[in-house]
Image (tube, rainbow, N blue to C red; front, side):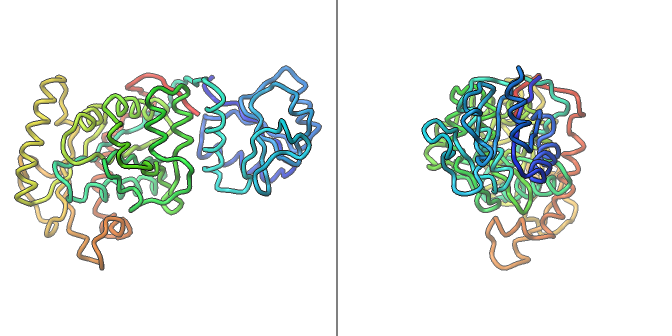
Length: 382
């Protein structure tokens, strides 16, 4: 229950084996896989009463008989340029490239399947997804670098990690690169009412090859971020949590305290609050902290218990007392002075900077909910 039934048919048995291994390791519990390396065996399956959600068949193996069955969505694996199967030009299924990064291949499969069905796949999760908000009272404190750096560290530890940038002007491209025809524009569109929501969200993601971190490309226009409201934010966070696909999700929030920020922090397991010693930031931090107090009173929830205050751009690792009313859980030196240039993206390549984030990650992992305990109930899984 809750898994997508996927049939793959290809003459290349080694390709099928590697495909199956990758799904088991990187998409555990999300697909029920059946494979065939001969046309006769595939026809035997299609002649039986069995059905599948998706039938992925090499275009060289495809024939008209396959197109006559009604056993699931048929997609063609094309070894050359995508096109129509030669045996059935007018009614051939959609084809996708066989030789591409498998994450992109799976995303394309999910996109095509979700476009053809309204099916949701409810599943009782086996582990909890830890949602971590990374917030700041003002811009320019290194919030995005810390969010991206923590994502990279968690991915390096073997955790399936997603970096979710909700900034009005996203800085995602400074940290991660990936290939996808979709972006956060598609995410916003689907959040406004699409069925099979998780399938559509998964089809829009990218994966950074260097770090293994998953993310969404920025929207086509930053004006679209004005359409993303607190209801969308809550729905998105709940989908991440209930899908049980990712171990860690780091949410890079806009600076300040908007309705979107408030709802994301409310539904987070931990809140990394990034601070810096600066008179302007101090005045904004006072306003920010008062806002958190008001939210706590409104919701009758202890947001302060989730907070991990981080002092960034410090002159060293000396002990600090309270900073704007908070005792820092971690103090990070000004690593931007250790190399030429101060671009945000260059920091995550700085070993000393990533090393300084270890204490933050350790404290976050210590707060991670235990496996098998769901906080928001079941959800949908691809």
